[in-house]
Length: 218
Image (cartoon, rainbow, N blue to C red; front, side, top):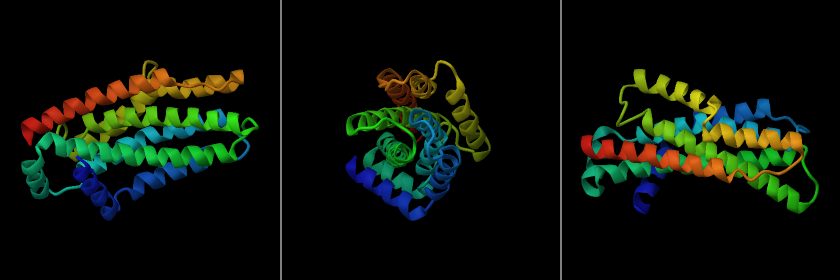
């Protein structure tokens, strides 16, 4: 699996297809987060912006290989392992991007003083960002190959689903962002572990479905 992850990471970097989603995230955060804004509100905004970007990165990763190269890799490593590595590469790239976004947002926003509160606040933002990345991974896994192969279906499905899970009341991503915003009003520092657990469960189910489909269809 490590070899597959390295292979997919190299494909992602060489293709430069990571550039549009990363630039989109930078633009959204750059416009929506301003110096001096409440830190938890800003962290919630940055986390929410990561969800559609993650879905996009997952789409890029699962479509990075030509069909012939993917068939060779699947023959050597099993189709579901190849697909899992591609999805995981997109998730890891998104979490790394979210960590950078969280650090920058925490640095420029108006937050608590002292090393301890600052670290806890940034940690809460990183947990929320990870929850959003996991939900975005679920969206990317369900709305792209092998379940939806045609761009005419997969692209709008990915975009609309990312928006839907971001605003839906029962969504772990919505809960994580809402926790940060509510805590900002109350003057507390939340730890959104429950939304993170829900997001991890949703991602596991979605990726499992996609990998099972990859095993059947190749």
